[in-house]
Amino acid sequence: MKKVKKMLYKISQEASDYDTYSGAVVCAESEKEAVKIDPSGFRLWHDGAWWFQCADHEEKEKHNDCWVNNIKDVKVELIGTAEDHIKIGQIICASFNAG
Image 1 (cartoon, rainbow, N blue to C red):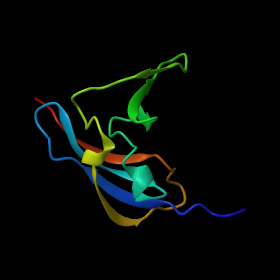
Image 2 (cartoon, rainbow, N blue to C red; image 1 turned 180 degrees about the vertical axis):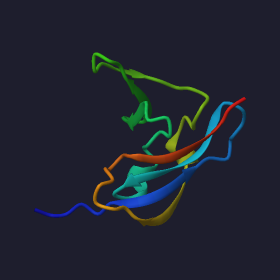
Image 3 (cartoon, helix red, strand yellow; image 1 turned 135 degrees about the horizontal axis):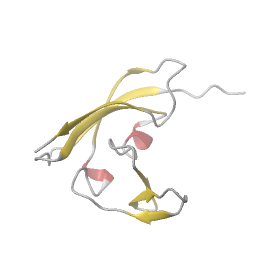
Image 4 (cartoon, rainbow, N blue to C red; image 1 turned 90 degrees about the horizontal axis):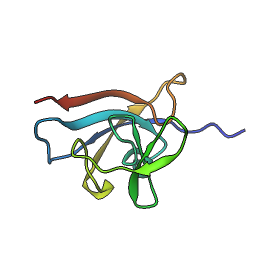
């Protein structure tokens, strides 16, 4: 069985204001996957949009002003290798600018 390479990335955005995430440290296999992680942990990126997963596992398209609406606006920086106990998609820490 092939071991998945787990990396740590700093993701950030420049459109920070009050009540927005300025960035996060996340675990992903690649930069391409890191930009699909929302720092809130409540939305997933697929099919060209952010989707919120409800308690009944139904997904609803969800835009909000707390993070970018397009993953092209996410900056990604590789910062290291994740330890074995860290899971792909895990948010290690996030910075939220409360207003």
